[in-house]
Length: 389
Image (cartoon, rainbow, N blue to C red; front, side, top):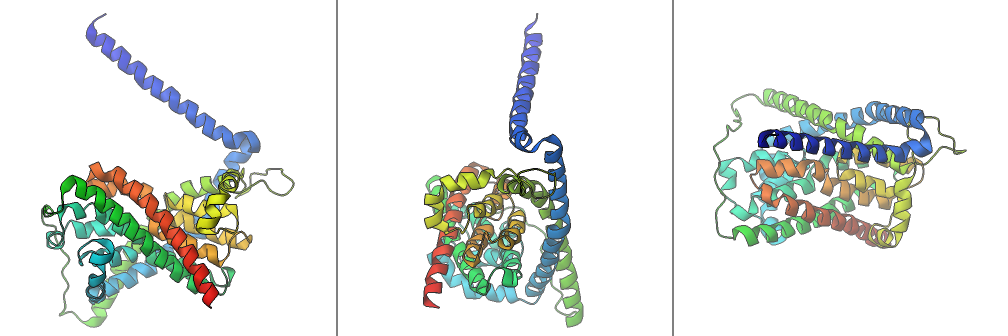
């Protein structure tokens, strides 16, 4: 047998080995659900839960995204974002170690989603305010505030089901996310500064076509164009969260929820094996002081937020309805959904666009720590304010 044939044979065997290993792992994971629930009930629960989330949750999130997108576009069209940038600039250097121009990235991502900061980072006029080591940290900074407006609006929309202090909870959640963002960005800057130094300017990329504002057009036309464009972006964002909600949230709900009354599975939506609460019970001595969760089921929200903030938000109403969460938990949920905002599903691609892939691991570790700080800060801030009120 020739050397070339041996290489082909060994390569083929290696490929089949990976396939077999994958199938073994897949079957083991699938059996975690099938053994207690049964094959038919597992498949039915998967489909029924995904369908209910699609109809009752994702369309609501899309509606919020459309309205938030329209408001964001109006703010951009009439210079409100520029005004906010000027007002927030003096805070950026001492708090985040970033130039004042990064405040625009905070506002932009808060009103949309994590990748919104990438369009700014590709603009040569924007990049000239930064040093080379600060560019990768834009991923952490932007992600900390991604979907902030949508998360906050969603939480406030929970109304009385979350408690009379839901507004205070939303405020504490936002402030907790700020604390987490500072930690995440500062940790990232330490890693990039060691590698790139602190003096080299950010490399200028090819210039991108910028949006021009026709200030001679009538106010009504500018308003209509802005809200239509923003609304369309909201639709895209709403569509973008559907895979995360249906896939991640369905699996997390099945890992979180327990069997129906009587212990007999029927294949209905939202049945599960209750694995995550059991794990959380073992970690209660850590989770309780940090986040103050009313129930171990609350861990499902931050776990889901790792992959999708939209999916994590969809779990909150169910926890409130079943009495497994209260207003204090909502503050923690807000902070962690906003600060993490699905960073495991966006960090890799964002770092690739920023041409900083070698720092992807640092970005993920830094942001994991930042999200934990955000949740703890929101919890203790809410407890403190409730003692004062």
